[in-house]
Image 1 (cartoon, rainbow, N blue to C red):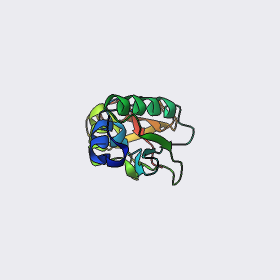
Image 2: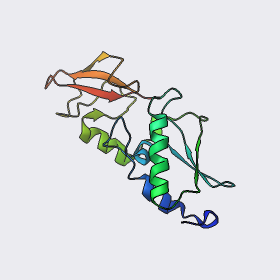
Image 3: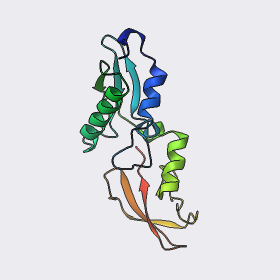
Image 4: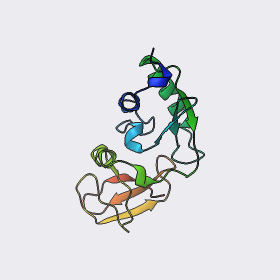
Length: 153
């Protein structure tokens, strides 16, 4: 068991890099940017959900707990931190690439989304409400495929 006074934060991040997001399993929780950092006294991992009512928050916290315990970090606590609120700017470059490869348009301030299937920007929003609260439903007018777009916030 790791001594809490000498915890290697890089080792913890490496463990958490293998914890998938339960709603988008192609992304790790580190890709998503919800691991905010670490606290001391007691040693803890700081997690910010993508929004305060995210239904996956408890599942993520349980998955983090299991991963930490299995890696020998049982004495490291988990703390939910709501302020400042999570923003899509915290999604890593690797996370954006993984979203695109998974078929979800990454968040962007652009008025149109880039189709993850064919790369066209000739796309339209079909519904502000997608398969999860953090995504909207879009359609490509070039290849006619529907796709989710991660909402900016």
